[in-house]
Length: 419
Image (tube, rainbow, N blue to C red):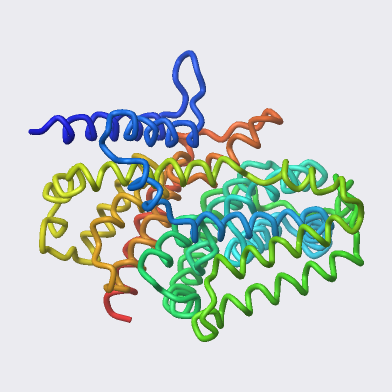
């Protein structure tokens, strides 16, 4: 075994352990720092050149994510999420209906925005709702990330791994959604049944009229600018849908929308641009850049082919089955989270096999619901809840997470195999 291969394997293993564990006894290692450290080590040890690393970074994915985050931040600034909560409470006469409404809204928003951003904004709002309504917040917080993950399966812009897959495999927005929206709807229905049944003891009480009060908003609603933001959101989704027909990249549409969103916010004061910049989750972008460089080293060193040879269907010249790919991606997603697992497996798939790429998108995301560590959205909700002394129990959650994921993954295999 060559020096390059050994060094690449050591760096790869070290990086993915940091991404998976994140919290060490004496230090909290952020996932973006871990990924960038792995990429830098690949460069320092000469496993990949600076030019090769630069060529491996997919800037279409980076700019797509950045543009969408700018758009979401504009919606947050104008009070979009506060209006959703107000309507949510006024239309929910019972705890069960409130939970179902939260799951439907979270899934829908995650289909047209990045799910990580949705749960980051939605979690504090749901907590305020539950406290105002004197409801146990745990079922509703679980509902937020479970439905956000499922809803994000639907579209290219639903989560970071979908954006990567669509760019890597050349799948256009409409084709992606036509195949996966029905699957997401079916899986969401299954998830609603699971969550309602598992937390049924907390769902029996009705919400009295005196509790259907307005929630004190953290931001005032700017209705005039909100109208423009909603028009921009609809226009963005529309142009995403026709992007392949007009020959424009998704990343270009996203960046134009993000720039317009920033201008709308700045019409209320140029200093608000600083607020927008602070609200963007830059760690996601650096996380991807680090992973791209890390994967450049894995590919250039020959390590990827060695890894592929260990799994049936992933060796040289082999093509995995839908079932085999689903199982492999599900296990890997819960070991190292779904974004890095997709980037690793993606290097082993044939670019032209759309069904396999869609399987990877669906399986890696749905498998993220198995544990609290399976997806970034789960971790975000748990950490936001912990800030206000609400703790999601890892072991209690897997009692619902594992069976729910198994059922939705079986549905995924059947759906993509026969439909």
